[in-house]
Image (cartoon, rainbow, N blue to C red):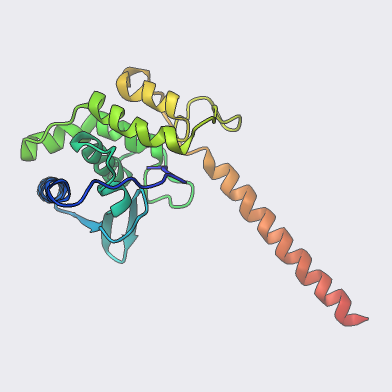
Length: 213
């Protein structure tokens, strides 16, 4: 969900915590019913304000961390959106993650929510998603994560993954979402890998030269 550097503000103890526990239990039960081929995990002991998608052996996993699951700013729609976004990494088509071509990129995951994900969840479980309420909830987190940051100067203008104002615009106006053939971050990942190899090779060459002296 790209909530890097966000500080967790958990719901209170007692009844507030019990209500959040019940809400999470219901939401996760609905997701397991709507997407039975995926594994859903709650790491409530982690303070990380994020959710994650990954492949573990033959399992496709969606994990939501406690810092996000119990964040005071998150409402039910925000939690549903966060989980649908992670499911979208597994089920979306189009752009791929720079680090893993088996998973959809951030923009493709968002597009999948609007085109298919929310409708499938509603059909299978009756649970609805209000994009407006989800955006309002998530915006409080992204404001903390990206306070003072403008749009990235790298990459094509079609990518909205790490620029909240553009991402918000696409979410509330899905017809404005452009097609993403592949996550542009792939290019920078490859350049970084090349630079790391060159640095490693340079160090190895330097060691060989010193050993000959």
